[in-house]
Length: 67
Image 1 (cartoon, rainbow, N blue to C red):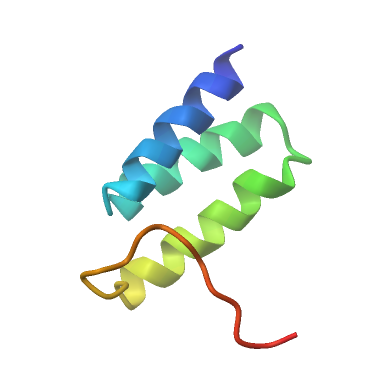
Image 2 (image 1 turned 45 degrees about the vertical axis):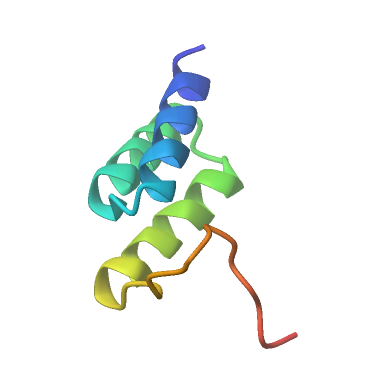
């Protein structure tokens, strides 16, 4: 399915720290699947990382510090 392919490409770009392009893929997933919560989370994370890039040793994992 097209949405899955876009999601997979978005994750690859996200892990490669190409956050703007990754966000475009996840936004397209949301266009196809408006209630896709995971794509929405990735769009938010990409926007945050564009503003404040993760450390050089970032592995792609998001650690939450608040409950």
